Image 1 (cartoon, rainbow, N blue to C red):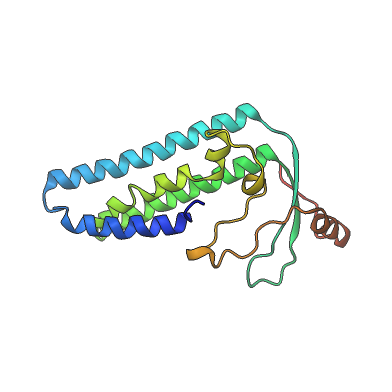
Image 2 (cartoon, one colour):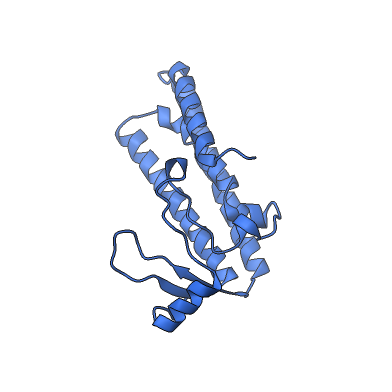
Length: 191
């Protein structure tokens, strides 16, 4: 039984908060070292994403993937049928990873450079790298795990803290797809 990633993130955050209290950020060399650690950790994620992009494009799996995407929470919209390929789906998931990386770097830039917070640099040097290596794309394309069970596409969005707030993920069962096709809520084709 594996430990929930959110639990391990919480443990890492609490541990690093205690460690960061003891780090002398007043020393310019220590501060430069922590900044270097943060930059290196983000470069590792960039290299990982570039390798994933190369692997996805090299495999170019054109298997058709149909699923029903749930309506956004709180909206009156109907769930919609999406028809795409495994290749397109994986590239879409990788794009979401790039966006997450850029958002994290942007927020950290504002917190560190503008607000002068230094403690989050340590935590943000570890958590994003851990998250990148726990991603489904890495499990499939780097660790070579088969796309079955939890790794079967489409993937459910990760829930919030303790698995709450994740809502329901995309449905790929035959019944949901047939209902969406019959009701005319589909036809969205991602190329």
